[in-house]
Length: 251
Image 1: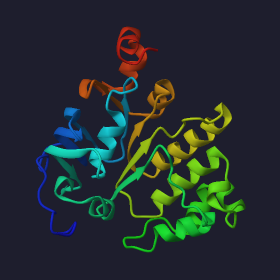
Image 2: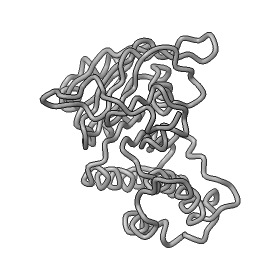
Image 3: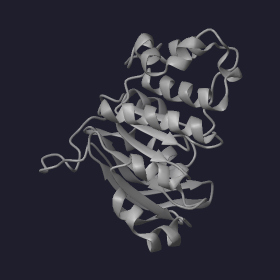
Image 4: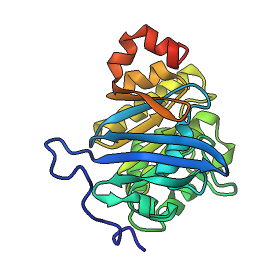
């Protein structure tokens, strides 16, 4: 089955403000461990949604479920992106359909330069941003284009991981803990890059333990607790609600 084979009409088609991405009643497991327990939310085209919660709430597992990674295993639920039934796809088919996951561990390929990491991402169709366009938005990577990717600083590796995702044609960008382990000044650089991505209208879901930073970038917020959604609303609502933040985010 190809991504094209799976394309059909999503449940939201025909609505006044249809969702570009939606997931419904997701249930996924690591072995016998029940991690994602009925999660469902939507994202409109061009929105940034912050997926938040305490450690162990199921945030990364939800992203990996959406990206159709081998673990956790999706047992029930539907995932739709731009009219395509992603829940019927494998991980590589989901990537070809436009799901771009930037994992927490970045997964820079050893032995390859910055430029070779980007070129490798463009071997398979469809291709996204050109290498030169990526260098315009990530000038630090342009300066280090011949340097081995794994020898970059943590912040530079994060930039490379995001750029590599954009090198493919991405419709939904999934960012998993993009600020983890980075100095505040580097976090600000990554924030600027995400703002640039938003300006280009790229639909994004960001998981981030630094909830305040993520909320300032996001249009909406979804909060998880023990694998279930406990809040789905405006990002500003969370910023304005100290009790909600304390109960579910401990901030």
